[in-house]
Image (cartoon, rainbow, N blue to C red):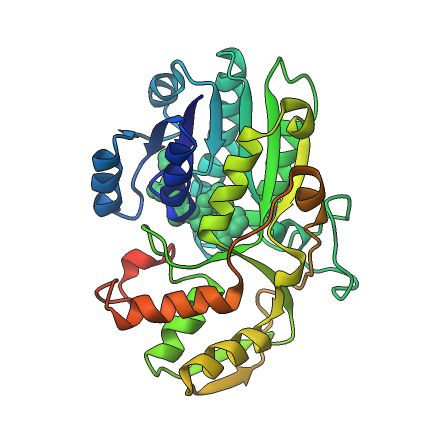
Length: 323
Ligand SMILES: NC(=O)c1ccc[n+]([C@@H]2O[C@H](COP(=O)([O-])OP(=O)(O)OC[C@H]3O[C@@H](n4cnc5c(N)ncnc54)[C@H](O)[C@@H]3O)[C@@H](O)[C@H]2O)c1
């Protein structure tokens, strides 16, 4: 297939490109390089991926990007609660209007498959977070970011699809070493800070959240693309593993256990009340998805990369979506 990956120079996108190339697809990326990822762009070039530098909000850029494409994986977004909260107008124009325009163009252009990167944040604050929620559970988003994802899922899955087979993947929170590194995500941030011997302030330490390795997130996308249309069209899948729900307390324990050090203070804060335990049985039972990594092995990998100074300054703003 010829696959367009929007956000192909992002954290998940940069790994996905490798997965798709390995599966034999012809890959094109559309990315505005919002975080200055010139190193990632150079790597895509060296892999033979056609990188189009452009904005999903630009009709010309969308037209060029969609030419001859069989499948679209839509990752490009203003990503995360803080980034969206900081600039709601930008996030609305990219995440809502940009997405809607891309879907409309893809439909009109006869694209066969459209895979939308959604999030388990859609579950928000669960009434009973100890019982894992599945795809049929109530969505209770507690941030603009998740509200926009919920709205886009609905508009993608409802109404006349005009031949476009849409699938929504609700990713668990991603972690692990990637080519476009992000240290503004819980596992990565905690590991970096404790490794660097910075005191870590943790709030909501008993809140549950699921996690998935960045390469496994990419594998889940590749698996959906490889699955028969009748199994994935018009469907939602949580992407992760049911055993990979952790409280922040558990993450701290794993990291300090591996490092043999770490100063942590548990603080009280009212922000970010997300508390959800998620079931990933649908993607496992229906598509046979099995992640290769677990949080402890991902932390080991992160510590190894930090020890090898793979990131230069891991506190550089380029590793964060909130600068
Ligand atoms: N990382 C996670 O924990 C996580 C969890 C759930 C869902 N997701 C979703 O997965 C997708 C990828 O997330 P990520 O972690 O790789 O984030 P990321 O910020 O690393 O990647 C997003 C990419 O989109 C690009 N982009 C932003 N605005 C654009 C625009 N207007 N036009 C073209 N490109 C634009 C950025 O340059 C970046 O490369 C997002 O849709 C995100 O909401 C991520």
